[in-house]
Length: 273
Image (tube, rainbow, N blue to C red):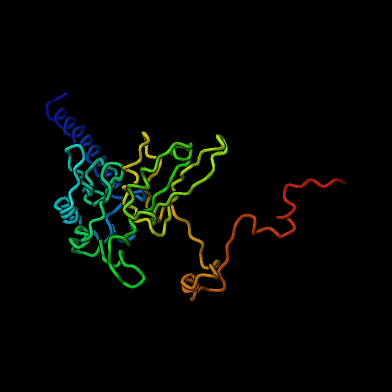
């Protein structure tokens, strides 16, 4: 084989390998920049789809969080909340996020991360109450969810770590007393999360004493259900306003609803002939 042919084949193989590697890198980049529904965003964040369209990956919110006044030191180490997603984090690269177990939101009164945002990806509109007042207490970063099978309070052990860590004390998490039927003379002290007051800060998850947190924070859009416009709390005037403009033509279809009532009611029943 002459030198020219050998050089040509060598260059071809190298170019093919480079293209394959480049394609893998681009593919990984694209994959990491897709919408990640379990990502927790800073207070005031738009819904994930709109957030990704609006956030310019400037990092100003992360810097504002890092330089906040109410720094938290645990075991001599400063706890940082917001991170800027890097390759390998499995988050859209360059966007802010936080991990409650290791760095929850510490609910700064002045919400520095929110007001540092130049584009509106983080907006005060998402931290307002019904009166239009802006405060960290009205943020909806996520919602805490308890796993009863691993929460030791459900075992009958006396633990109120998440309750005591919650900045919305007796609002977002309350304690429900129940009789311990196993012993007949003790009580369960069960933590109960109230989603309407929970900000999703994650301080409860960080405080949880179990090896793997028995209380976790998830994005509200992922965890919470939606009753829809067909159902209303007739005793609640605010809920009546929610469905004021609802369509009367709204329907819910399932596999069962496609059958007649007789077919559905008698499904699975064997009649004696």
